[in-house]
Length: 325
Image 1 (spheres, rainbow, N blue to C red):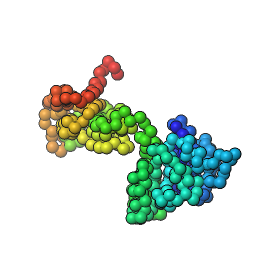
Image 2: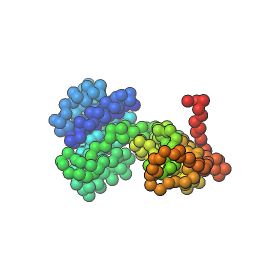
Image 3: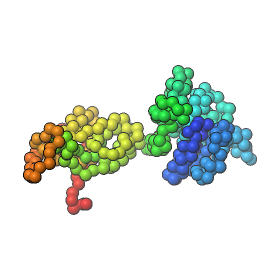
Image 4: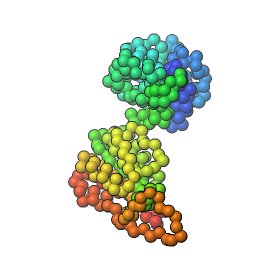
């Protein structure tokens, strides 16, 4: 895809260099448009070298009839403004086009347009700014919300530049074919844990990566995605509509069943434990010289019960067999 990365003069501008690198590595044709003040903070040469791309910052740079803002907006698939300062956002919201970036934004008439607001938390929460941001949302702009944390000014609040992976995923989200639009998809992922005592448990080996990847792609395809996950070390996938953490097979059973009737597609990817201890010991069992015998009982077969209950839902199950290891 052809992407224009618009860069304004926020203190997080250095992170946009990494974003340019990530977009390039994904195989996109990248063009960078900088505001005049942005060029004072980082040289255009840096973006050109890292992104292997052309960099534009002068709206009067007309060459042989090639007019920068009209040609860039006409031939671009996705417009990403990151970082987007309060000044740039407010200009775009009010139709002010006094530099090349705001000109491109005003002329860009496709759906895939992304803003990454980055600023001091008091500026972000300002009523006038929020009105401008809401105006752009209502006009089709997708906003990657800033994060909360320590800001460059030393204060703490909402306004930090988000992870670049989240911005890249927003590009996928806006451009992926929407074959699941209007569908509700429920996905389970990860292992379950069945407690023996306060510190010990029985579990299945599962990273959860496949289930999380399925949730990501289902969301890209336009579905409303609920992800029910056992304990993993993974971050929740970006933009899923509902993320539910569980531990035991019983907890997973309850969360799946309460959502099943209102779901179109269920993908049971979790490695749910088949057995659990009949008795859970209080506290931590002390180590002794004697052997410990655990009596196990079956957990509920979630997939089997879903098969018995289902009407028109599509039900997908996974099974790990030792001969396939």
